[in-house]
Amino acid sequence: MKRSIAFGTQTIQIDDGVLDAYRVKLAQSASKPAVRLVYAAAHLVLKNSYGEVDQRFDQPIAPGEIFEAVDWDSTFALRRRLDDLGFGIAEAMDTAQRFLIGWENASHLIEGCGALNLKHGFVAGAGVDHLERVNDEDQLVEGVVFQARAIQAAGGIPILLPLLWLCEQSYEEEGYVRVYGRIAESLDGPLFVHWLGEMFLPALAGYFPGRSFERILAAHPQTLRGAKLSLLDAELELRLRRELATRDQILLTGDDFNFAQLMTGGPITGETTIGTRRVPTGDFSHGLLGIFDGIAEPASLALQFLARGDERSYTQLMTPCEALSRHLFCAPTQHYKAGLAFLSWLNGLQSNPMLVGHEERARSKEHYMEAARLASLAGAIRDAGLAAERVDSYLRAN
Image 1: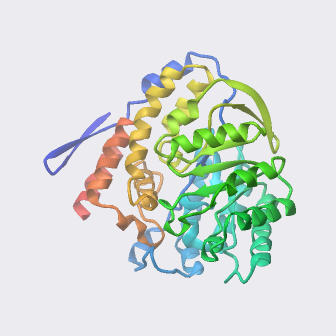
Image 2 (image 1 turned 45 degrees about the vertical axis):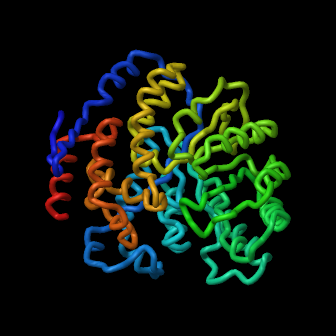
Image 3 (image 1 turned 180 degrees about the horizontal axis):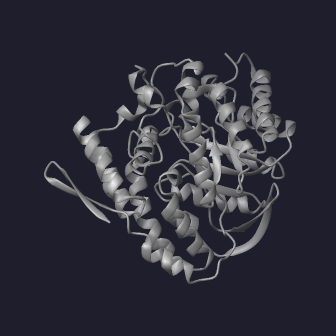
């Protein structure tokens, strides 16, 4: 089905049949085991009543108020859907507005995710946001270890979130190596390290100074099984993943601009173990991406084609997905969650497009209309009729 929406001097085409031919083609070939480890970072869904709440994403919000505003059933339904499409879940990370919602809500997400008994498992962010303040390095290390153990108890793999305290205290390379080393020595693996760029959180400017990142991963390869890189720097990712590969570690791309090519890479040359899973290795990146939240269906098909060795179909599917991602993650990049919630609403997966702190207001009407157009081209629209109705209602309201 195709629908047209008038927007100013433009006509936006909404099409839900983009994936039909690919589904037919896939059904005609034998299934193959996955060749990439992929996690989708999922967002939060809010109750309709939150529309009456006057809050801002750039101001502190009490965790209890956030807890009452979240539609937990719909939030966990999103995670079940992603798991059904072949993705592990990346829980309580930036896509779930982790740096705004606090540990009270993050721990509920983590425990709830564990209770879903997901086929493809989950990773979750470990930080120190359960502490009112960090007074010294010992407290910082103990805080991360506490959260990591809570994630492990829920059945997940901890991913060590960036520690703002290190920036605030102007730690240099040796300090980073010492702190991460103490954390790694206090925990059983597997663990991942998250390097999040300042485009996602400006306060992280200068994180991992010098060669601290490389030294940390090199010192603890049996515990730190890899890293997620969210720097939007493809050349740096290529260099780092090749260095990690020499120690049997993997890199999970968080590059929402260049993920398609980074995940294609070279041939499979071996295998490694991450927890209980055997994971293919080679000169390619695995994936932990917020955009998977918005492109789950076309990306799921693309990854199945990649497993069958059909790189042409993989690329045909992923190229328009990447165009959509580049738009959703355009500057100011930190507000990409707004586009994900909007597309989820267009697809009938939630009853409103709101985010905690009304972060959805950080993007313009023009941004959302271009998101709808690009989502249609990427095959990320499930029902053109419903999506067109919701686009029309959004335009009338705005």
